[in-house]
Structures are given as structure tokens and as C-alpha cells.
Image 1 (cartoon, helix red, strand yellow):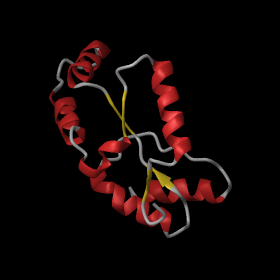
Image 2 (tube, rainbow, N blue to C red):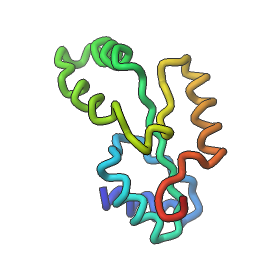
Image 3 (cartoon, rainbow, N blue to C red):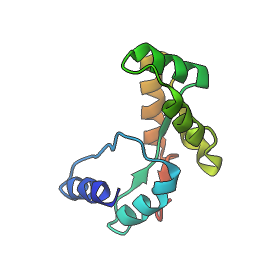
Length: 117
């Protein structure tokens, strides 16, 4: 995670807006936010999370694996984010609505984490 944070920081330092798309659990968030915050890079944290049944169907519908236990375990790890629950946007809605909800949350600054929040 440190290497990915440093790569994101390099792009941000060069003037780019960086979107880190991947699985970043809250167990890594403090370290990442601190590392980027030390470089005065603003960090926002957004979690797209559907309902459990939707997530299970999506994994099964992909058809690339009959096993869903790994996805179930990962879902459990993001099921209750505690104080970060306000950073969750449901991805059960149509894509256009999810995109608009993400844009609005990113603009209003409510997703900010780290030293600057």
C-alpha cells in the first residue's frame, strides 16, 4: 500500500487529480491518509457497497468463478465501517444515479479523511 500511496502522491504532486480505484479497507486508510497528508495531499475515501444479495448475484453472474466465499468474506469486512459508514454510497441504483451520488459527495467534501479533515 505504501508504494501505491507514493505513486498516487507523485501524480498528485505533478498536478493530476488521482482516483485510486481498488480495495482499500479501513485497516489501511489511516496509514495512507497520513502518508499523503504529510505531503499536503487531500484524501477522500468513498466505498461503493451494494446490498449483500446484490453483491452475491454480481459475483455469481460474472461466471469466472463458481466460488463466492472470498467475496462474502470481503463483503463482511466492509459491512460495517463504523465512523466511516458515512463514506458509503449504495451501488444498487442505476449506474447514472450512483455516478451522480459519487460526484456530489466528492464535491461537498464530506468524504475527506486524514489530518486535513
